Amino acid sequence: MKLSQLFTKTLRESPKDEESINAKLLIRGGFVAKNSAGVYTFLPLGWRVVEKITKIIKEEMNAIDGQELFMPALVDKKYMEPTERWNLDVGYFAKSKNEKEANFVLGWSHEEVLTDIAAKFINSYKDLPFYAYQIQTKFRHEARPKSGLLRGREFMMKDLYSFHVSEEDLNSYYEKVKAAYLKVFEHCGLRTIYTLAGGGVFTDNFTHEFQVLADIGEDTIYVCSKCEYSENKEITKLKDGDKCPKCAGKISEKRAIEVGNIFKNGIKYSEALGLYFVDENGDKKPVVMGSYGIGVSRLMGTIVEIYNDKNGIIWPQNVAPFIVHLIVLNGKNEEADKIYENLQKAGTEVLYDDRLAQSPGEKFADADLIGCPIRIVVSEKTLEKNSAEIKSREQQKTELVKLTNLVDKIR
Image (cartoon, rainbow, N blue to C red):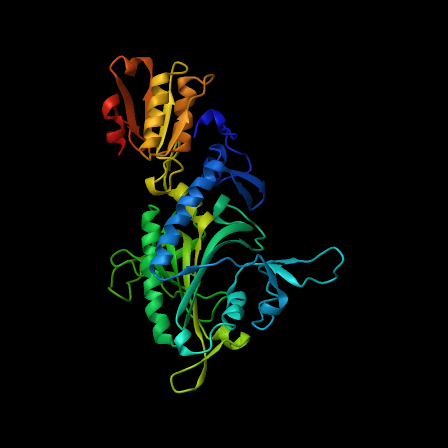
């Protein structure tokens, strides 16, 4: 991608109505545009990051036999009433101008929808288990949306649902999802803490969250400094300074961002919506269910909160919009064009700053703000030595590399 052709522009000043680092840097860098409180558009650079994150998620979900589907954003009242979740103050009702009452809600969760679908296909124990997931836009009634992508009214989410013959089978798959989630977050460059939590409006059982330590986090967790056993403040009896019940290590109070959660739903939804199967003995039983979520857009915002400096974003390589930010100084340069073409032919994603009107300082500032992992600079000075200058975004040190070795060096 040539920067001269990118329709978005970087901003020198942070938006005045944003306090969080992720919102400031993502808006300034041209990754997102704020439409209203808690509602954002993902611009071309931002969408590339989203695609990288979703690719990681899909690979891990497919590895544990998840089958991808896509459910509607409009959820009919008939699905939510049997589980008594229709009137909860969580989502947004949707109705036409001529209707007095709403018959739909903008989807904030899809347990009921998929349970009803599953009832059309599951009859026998031979049909189980199965696992289905989607990456979909969700809508939540947030009275005070804040912190950029960390708390929104409209956001992207991956939700996985599992269907089982027994609690034992659910427990086994629950551990597989836990391991897959840890891989997802690790590939995104995040270290998460597995945290015991409540079920909220989703289940009466205890659940687990994946928390990233961060001062901006809205969750308070109590975590052991030795074994990292952790509980959410909402359900814990632990206090700062207590001994860990698992290993006697010291418990500390921490702020954290929840990037994922997993739930054992049991038979709550299957009994309410008539999802049963016939077991090996011919007995009719309710299907046992689990659900598992990852906030895709929240994950993006969390990465920026963790990886940044005073100059901008520092993207981990797996989720960076481009691997290389190529800068040409002193006007148009044929050698820089060749480098751009050769890197692309080698399969390297390159953002090429070929703009003519910007000064070297402006180009360097934009490179730091956008935050691609590797910066390459081509100038008259470097070309005198048949070289280009290479610098890692997270380091200050620069290195001159011969043009003939450049593609191999980037590899």
